[in-house]
Image (cartoon, rainbow, N blue to C red; front, side, top):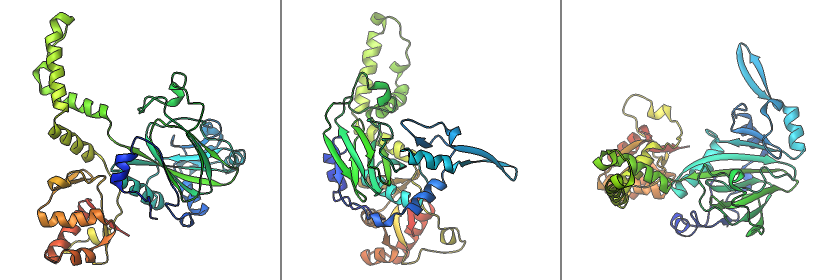
Length: 383
């Protein structure tokens, strides 16, 4: 399932990322998702997890709709389906957060990941009534809402607390930073539409009394305070940061020296690159298995029809001839870099197409390169 966002990643980063909402009509074919598929995703969720919930003007106590039972000596938990159906008929919303290993959901989430260059988390929402899930609120992450089935009305309000972080939830801050009276956007999100909403913008998605199912993909970039915290940790090697402090008169010189050192450290582009390297090295992007080829002994390489894409969240480092993917840093020579750039710019390109595009490079080198990078989880074979 391909997303056609109608805007380049660079244009999005320059004009919308973290700044203002973006509504994209008809970005995905709604015919590719069915209620059967939605039911199967919900059915494979861990219903006991705090990430699986019913909302009925607030979270419903899990003991009301989840029951324990013994399955041949193993304690398991299952939905009490009659109760769930009754709640949904009465306007509740069924929610599953942090969806993993679901091909349809993962496909869309990975496209958002590569489009933004950020880590992502997926959530799904199903409803049938007219009751909202949480009333007007802000999120502490940017969100791409992908309407897959049905419609939802969205009312959106400008931020009252710019760029809230995860400790600044709207339910705890709404008295000091109330929602504006008048919305800046009021529209219906149709099946196939995508809506990007930066963190901090108040919003209230409302079901319209008809079946609705949407995917929310939250993005998680490093924040400025993360860079500051990293810099302080690195700066512990500087002697002034290890000195004891007492009264201001006795500590002023130490504090000023420390502030100057931290400021200079933060403003150094090499230090910022190190921070980005470490951030990306800690991130992981799930990839598909290909044990029949990559796990087989012997001199096996990928077939010409095999499609490929990067397992990297961002293309950071390519200007310096390296890439960080799933905890692995790979340095490239000029010819290998050109092959990787082709894969980066054309996700899903085949081995055969790479051979055709790079005829100046020995076919054996290309085959060996892409096969080994798939084994290292730097490239992903696409099926």
